[in-house]
Image (tube, rainbow, N blue to C red; front, side, top):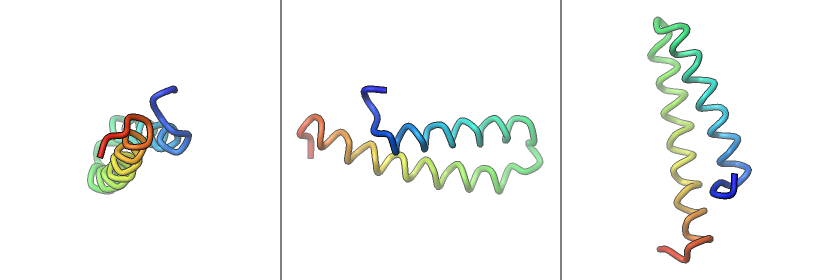
Amino acid sequence: MDNQSPEMENLNIQMRELMREWVKHPQNNKELKERYTSLHHQYQRLLVAWKRSHNGQP
């Protein structure tokens, strides 16, 4: 994608895979939620950095 770095795209793929697992196996909700949340936080940090470097935003 043009609006993501390769690292962001990789995290996005991982988050989608986790979400699929979560839907398949809702009984593992706590572990999958923790893993998803961790990836999401990483993604958000990369997104802010990416926006700053591409838009000049603080």
